[in-house]
Structure formats: C-alpha cells, structure tokens
Amino acid sequence: MQSASSQEEVEGYLRQSSEFLQLEVFSAGKKNKNVRWPLSQIFVDINHKIGYCPIGKVGNSTLKEMFIGFSNIDNKEMILSGGVHEVPDLYNTGLQLSDYPDDVVDGMISDPEFVFFAVLRNPVERCLSVYWEKFVKNRRTHGNVGHTAPVLSAVQRVPLNEVDVERGISFKDFVNYVISCNPDVLDTHWKPQERYLGGIVYNKLFALENLDEMYRFLEERTGLVINRKKTNSSRAGYASVVEGAYNVLPGDLEKYDNIEKRCFLNSDLLRKIERYYSVDCLLHKFAA
Image 1 (cartoon, rainbow, N blue to C red):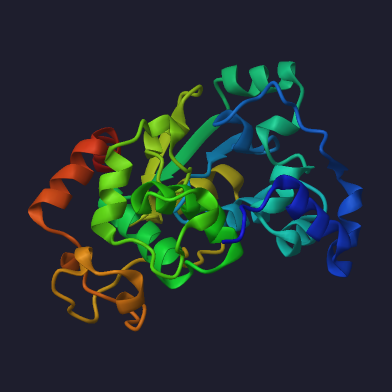
Image 2: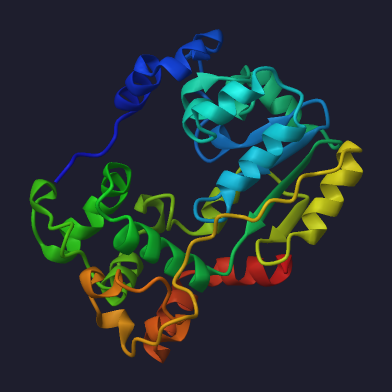
C-alpha cells in the first residue's frame, strides 16, 4: 500500500515541477496557524466582501475555480494551474482566511457587510459519490489511498500498511464504518457538512442540486457575469442495474460506468445515513 501524501511531498512535487516553479511568488508556509480548521480553509474575497466555505465532495473544485475567477487577487493562472486545492493550502495566496493576521480575520468575521456562503449536498448523494469515486473507480490512486486507508484498515481488520486496496470494501461496509465513528475524526470528504460551518454565521446556504440562486447572488454582489461550469459531482449514476450493489466489492462494480442509485440502498442503509447525517439533511432541505 502507498502511504498518504504528506504536505511535504505535495510541496516537493510543486517545487520540482517546471510548470510550477513560479509559485515562489507566494510565501510558502507563511500561513496563520492560529486560524484553525474549518475557518482556515475558507475562501475570502476582500474586495467584494464575500466568503465561501468549501466542503469536500460538494463540487468544491469547480466552485473554487469560480471564486478565484471573480476575486481580486494576483497570479490567478498560477493558482489554477498549480491546483485549486494544493496551492491555497500550502501558500499564502490571499485566498484563505489563514492567509491573514488575527485582527484582519476577526474583522472579516465580525463585519456585518461581509457575506459568507456555503453550498450543501444531499447527504445520501454525497456518500454515494464518495464511495464511487474514492473506493471504486479511483481506489488505486496514491492520493485516494491516503484518504481511504484508515477505513480499509478498520473494515479489513489489518494494519494500515497491509490494507488490500484492490479488494476494497462494499458500500455497506463504508456506511457501517462511518456511523461507528465520532464525526470529528472522519476524513473531510465524508465528515458531516455541518462540521464545516462552525465559527461563522453563514448568511447564505445553497443546494448543489440547484445553483441558480447562488449564481444570481454572486452576480448581484460582484457586478460580474459568472461563468457557470458544471460541478464535478461524481457518483454512482443511473445506468446499469446491479441488484444488491451495496454488498458488492469494487472489483465487480468498476466494470460499470454508472449504476442506479437505488441499487446501493436498502431501507436499513438509507435510515442509517439519514440518521447519522440528520443535521446535514435539515440544512440541505433549508438550502434547497
């Protein structure tokens, strides 16, 4: 099994890649360590007084690109080419709350004119998307193994360095693992969405399934026409029928491009997901 990608490994890759050499224009590592997660990763646009909370597996790659597009920061192309997740997390780009000193952060959070928003996703769809992408289709990739290995280790009952990535686990295994854990220790891709929203009063909540309201809000706020890209919301889709797919291992699932959502769910699994993510369900219903 490959070990998880560390911050040092990612930064080393960025430093060695010729197309990323110009990233030295940013202040590597000079982030405000006093600003902790989830506040640390919030995107801010001081010019338009907008803050956006990226949430794992809620279209945040596309939404981060959108935010960078209308924000008033330098070196946008370098950030986009270097990676909308990696570069802001590793470098002081002016995009995240953790790029600013304590007094400026406190000022943004307390400023009544500053508007913070988040995009939420149906928790059942999010779980399916996580499983399909990270535990089935892309389970062998180095980056994904860093996220999935602790789950595989717990379910397969083996040490981290002995997990069987090829064999993997079923969706039922994944759900049962998640609901057995304290939400605070879960990987951010399947951590409850409500855990991202602490520390700030959010003025706007939007649903991933209907982003028209978000685009209208941002266009009114910025005075710009926002490029409306389709979000990358990978999931088990609606093509093939594989009855009892929730009990099937990845090797027998990956041959399908898409599988009907209902095949991954029975009443017990649906009830478990909705109970564990009950606050997310309420927030999503409110946002929609």
